[in-house]
Each structure stands twice: as structure tokens, then as C-alpha cells.
Image (cartoon, rainbow, N blue to C red; front, side, top):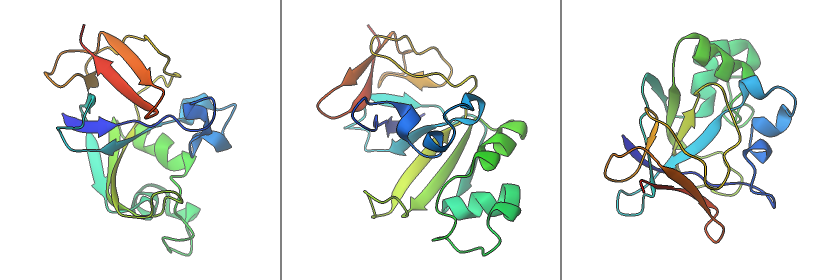
Length: 161
């Protein structure tokens, strides 16, 4: 289990506005959930990566799963996680992909440890939702009984009770 944060993007705080989801408004089957590894002391949500692959940047995953998406092989040209990469990772029975030094985010240019949750079926999280195992848990390892959206921090918080 890794301590993570999940930020809800945009004015309506919807995952649908995050990349690559915003490019695929009608293809929810290829949507993913974006998480960032955080300090255990700050974590309000924990994620079990399950069967995973680890890469430095998105371009490395693209080259591993579908190099035709990035013929130039340049990180700046292939900074997004392409939908075909998410689909092919799922077809390889992965439940997550990890990026150890992702630097291509427009709003957070410093290196981040990013995790992509590939669980299926994708669904929009909502306040008060129960998150079932095996993927998400609270700090003590208990299943998330209730998900709360902190409107101030725009983070998802797991509560066991």
C-alpha cells in the first residue's frame, strides 16, 4: 500500500477533466484515475498498486506499450499518457502504472511520483461513496467505509468509519 493523494480537477472537481480523460468524454472504458505518492504523515488515502509496472516518465510507458504513439521518442512531444497505453496496460492485466519522476505536468513542474489507477470499470467518485477493497484503504489498512471530498484541498479522503 502506498500513501497517495488524489486531486479533483476543475471547477466541478471531476476526474473527467484530467488527462487523458478530457480527451475521451465518451470513452469511459479507457479512463484512468491519477494519484500522487505522498508522505505517510499527510496521507488520507492509501492505494494498493497490485500488479504494476514502473517507469520514469509517460514517454517510457508509451514506448513500452505502443511506440507508434510517439515516433519522435521525445518526452516533450509525448508527455501525456495516451489512451491506447492505458488500454494495452489493462490488457496486460496491470492494475496500475507508476511514474517515478514525472516532470511534464503544466502546473506541477517539479518531479512527482505519479500513479495511474487502471482499475475497471472506471466510475466517477462522489462524496460519501464507499471504496471497496482491494485497492483503497485508510491509514490503518481498513477498507474505506466512506470517501469524503475535501473541498478546500480538493483531495479525496478515506474514512474507515
